[in-house]
Every structure is written in C-alpha cells, then in structure tokens.
Image (cartoon, rainbow, N blue to C red; front, top):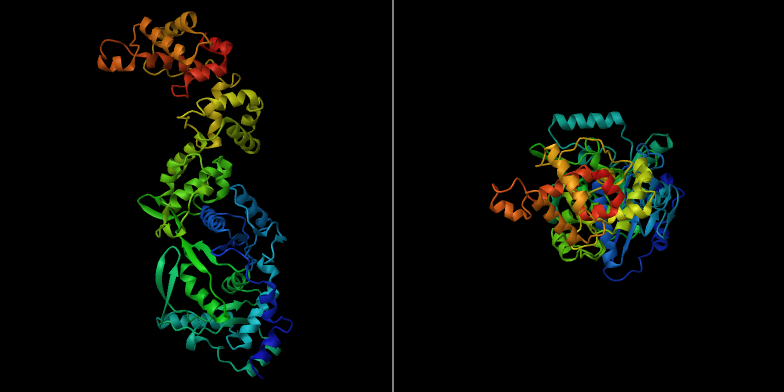
Length: 544
C-alpha cells in the first residue's frame, strides 16, 4: 500500500484538484488590479478595527480596478450566531461598504468564485487534503486529548517549546498499513500537515505595511482537517485565497505571527502566496497606558455604536483615513468638497505601530464633515436616524419646510456652523426653534448682564424701537449697536476693550440678552438668522 491508497481510503469521493484549478481560473483583470477580501467569522459583531481593514481593502480594490469580496469563515461552528452574516453585511452597508462578490445573505452569494461560505466548500478542502496525503505531505494523526495533554506536560517539564513537531509528533511516521488498520478499526483522527520546516532556520518576508521581516520557519505539524471533517482556519484560508485568486490579504496585526505557517501552506500546496498587509491594531488610552480597543470594555469598539449615536458614516470613514494615511488631513483641507474615493490612498504609507483611537478627534472630524453638508442632506439623514432612535425628534421634523430653514441657519456660506458632531445631539441643538418645546417660564442665565430690571429694560426698548423683522442683516446689526449706545453700553467691542471702565458692557452683552430671551442659551448660531426663521410673531411673543 502507498500514500495514494491511504488518501483514497480517507477521501474516497474527493475529486482531483485539477477539477477546481480549471473551475476557478486566473481572473481576467487589468494589470496591477488587486483582488482582496474581508473574511470574518459569523458572530454578527463588526469591530471598528474590522471596518478599518475593510476600508483599506475596498480602497485598494477600487484604486486598481480590482475586486473586493466577502467570504464567511464558519469552520468553527461553535461560534456561529444565527443571522450573523446578514448582520455583518448590513453593518458594513451602513458605512457604504458593498462588495463586488461574496455572500449576500445567510446562504447565497454572488460571483463566479464561490461558494463564499467555508461550510459550503467542504468537498474542495477534502480534494486538497487528499492531494497532500497522496504526496506524503499530510497524514492522519490519532493522538487523543489525553495523549496531547501528556505530551504538553512533558515539554513544559523539560522547558521545551510546546506543540506537535519533530520527535514529539508521535503519529507522523506511522506506516500506511498501520494508519489504514487504525482507520478501519474506527479510531478517531485528524489530518495534520507534515511540516518540512526547521525552527532553527529563518524565512524572509516582505509585509506590505511592516516591510522586510524575518521569522523562524514553522515546524509544527498543524491540523488541517479537524475531527468533524471541517478544515482549520489556516488550511481553508490558503485553499480559498488561491482558488479565489486573492492577491492582497489585508488583516489585523494579531495574524502576523501566523505568516510562517501560512506561507508554508502555500509552498506545500504549490500555490503562489498573496501579499500580506497587517494593519496596526487600534489602541485606546486607559489612564497612562495604551490597550487594545475591546468589545467587552468599549462601546465604541462596535460599528453599530456609530449608527446608534448618529455619527455619520462619512465622518467615521474620514476619521479612519486620518489614522491610515497622515497626509489625508492636508488633502482634505486642500479639497474640502471632494469625495474620499478621490484621495490617493497609499497602503505602504500606513503606520506600523498601533493607531491610537481618539473619540474627541473623531467628533471634531465629524463636525467638519457635517458642516459641509447641505440643509437638505442633514434633514434627510437626521430624519432617517430619528425614525429609528428618537421618536420625539422624528415628530418635530414632520414639518419639513420649517425644519429645512432651521438646518439652513449658518449653512452654505464660507464659514458654516460647526456645532453638530452627531445626530443624537441635534434635538438638543434645535429644541428652542420649536415653540411647543421652548420653555418660556424657565430661569435662564443671561451672562454678564444679570439684573432682572436691566434685562427687562433692554428687551422692552428693543421691541418698541429697534425690532423690525424685515431689516437686512447689516441694518439689524447697526440697530443692535444703536440700542447698546442708547442704554449706555459701548457700541463696539473694541471700544469697550480700550476703555473698559467707561461702560458697564458692550453690544455683545446686549445681544446676549436678546439671544437668551429668544433661545434660552448664551451660545447659538447666528442670531439674525434665528430670528428670521422664528418669524415676527414668535420673536415678539418670546421677548414679551
């Protein structure tokens, strides 16, 4: 008996690998086009680091006229969550990430290189495992859990590397006849790779982001087919990336140490490996030290958090590009109206060390992003968000014509307002613009002028003598100065600063009294525009 007989016994129905090599030919793409993928486990949870990874992948595919596909790696079926695939697809869709190929729901995919779900590709893995066994490059291993535990204990006692390798690989050199007998006797087994590696030798590798690195060769006889007949992640990813013709694997830094194992698998299978780009882990400051952004500790680790908070997808993607390429911020300042897809993203310019996540910076980016949006765009996005997360705000926005005027305040000019960073802030920002929400009887803080009689005097004189809803902005502002002067205040702020002892205050203090009387707030967008939107009757009613 020989290895081919053993391979036929274990996988009697598996096809020859030539069938799959013909079925999944090289892709017909332009020269330099990148084929990349996102390959999550179906847990339903999409980490902000995964979004970072998918953004990089999709930008590289689009930039080169390539393909970005979604593959579901569900060989560890204990972790699978019902409905998780659709959840992943929808979470990424919320951020404008749509795939050229891959899974479109729990069971179906689109594209010519599927199935795109590993549990549906079992026969393919069997064919390649059979191929390795027939060549003597893989073997059935009958080690029981007890044997493996005993092995580990001996290695630890001797202070040696733990694992199944070299002389410790008990079933590595079992004869074909002995293996066949054990299988026919019904003994349980897994399929292991017969590693050709030597831990004392080095391999050289060039990572797209990290550059040139060296690793010890892999000498572990890793499991490639588990006892349940499904492949391990290591084996499945090598077969899939080859047959799906992946040329660039963008993945998290936690997989960096697996590079020697993965390159060895490609070599043993006779495949050309893809390029690997290990993106930096997203970190967070915790006191004085940094740590990984954790899905257990940090709400912002999940991409759903941004949707629920109403941080626009454009803001999140723009922030991630800020930490991906340091020159993005300069590009954005020079090109305020361009879509991020026009940015010349350079994957090899990504930082090597962990990217520090800063929510304050993200919200600052978001304020700039929202400031560039039109009133109509903001209304539509806020309305959609409110429909799912804030019923009171949704009801407020039903008068679209009026709401558009509210969102139009200080918008569309050279210096648009930057007071909104997320849709969950909007209601509090605009509440005073809606009469049924404005509390006319509350006690408000008026700033520098706090005497009630003085406030009453300012407001009454303004209504009686200076208020005219039809004034243009310059006339309105000049009248504010006249009001200040009549009441004994400096009509210009700079006049007050030059001789502060001469006046009790300046025109800004007077306008603050009017502002607070109308809005209940000392800081708002442009007061003139607010008054125009509120209209004459509401202004008079509130001031009165």
